[in-house]
Length: 466
Ligand code: EPS
Image 1 (cartoon, rainbow, N blue to C red):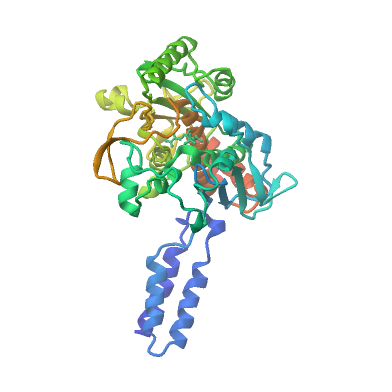
Image 2 (cartoon, helix red, strand yellow):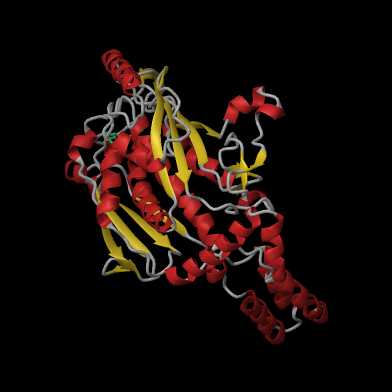
């Protein structure tokens, strides 16, 4: 048995140290793990435990940790907190920029009373010194000003439990009922406090930091609203740059590019408010400046299209995601969907259009990434929907919590942030390094290779001769 392990382990190690491991700088050495397992083979009588240790270390997959983050915090708790790990050292962190994005997330026409209470601002507790990341984890904090009004209701102290503001009539469309069943809560506040979109404030802070990393490499993302309820804005001109979109949406109540549609959107929201109803909509995120080659076709969970769709879908209320032509591609013949490969004026390989939305085979193709997400109407309705009171088992209208009429503009800011995070993560998998200097070198080298490749046969031959 021991010999079987000894014979097998080098094969295992060779396999797991292939360049498939996405974030090289954060890989815990497989060699170390296998050596550790061998130590167990030496020390454990009979060696069976050692063999099992090797099998376990192999089966549980590569011990790779790329960029990752966690957040915690309830809507009416003291604060939202976040921890980011895996950012390279030397990245310039602009607090002003993060705060501007937090302000944007709070804005947009159709928001509820909470937004006049909160003044979301980021506090950086660790991982940044004199404006630059150190390579250590970043700890972030956003205080909830409203907590002052909720201290007793949200208290961790068992002596404070009075049943005040208990929620027992679940809202259709919210996490209330499903979460109540799953976690066996009678007071649905235990579910809704975390399910609330308040948590997206931290996602925006985290995504803004990812945007700062991407901006260093000239990658810019811009989110904007394309529909509210049944009112659609006229399509974005394909020549419109992300920086211009940012400027235009900064002056719009709906973060929208179509002033006329915006008037109609406003009317629709006012009407919905009067009816005690809510509205959803659609936003788009455009990401410019991406090199070809981010993401990979080789394995399902490395495909960037799937990862971006998952990130957008994880925003509360998002029910559909499209990339490029999206759903409309399904109704067209292939000849009207796929972007022909052509030569541009400088004889470089280029594309005739961008129906693919910048992604082919789960890999960026060098064109702008175009994503759209559909948001359902917010499930807290002033004119409450039918429900059941879990305390009595009798029919009772759903609970009415203060909420928004429409949060699609805010969702476009969250969408921009989660997309930036996911792209930055994939970017760091390709150009991994512990410092910005290291990442820059990897990026420069690859950009040079890609440029030559796109020069056609001559460029490729040049590389071959290097
Ligand atoms: C939100 C905070 C919440 C809601 C909204 C978004 O605050 P409150 O519940 O105190 O009004 O306004 O949450 C939801 C839409 C939801 O479904 O829970 C925020 O900070 O964005």
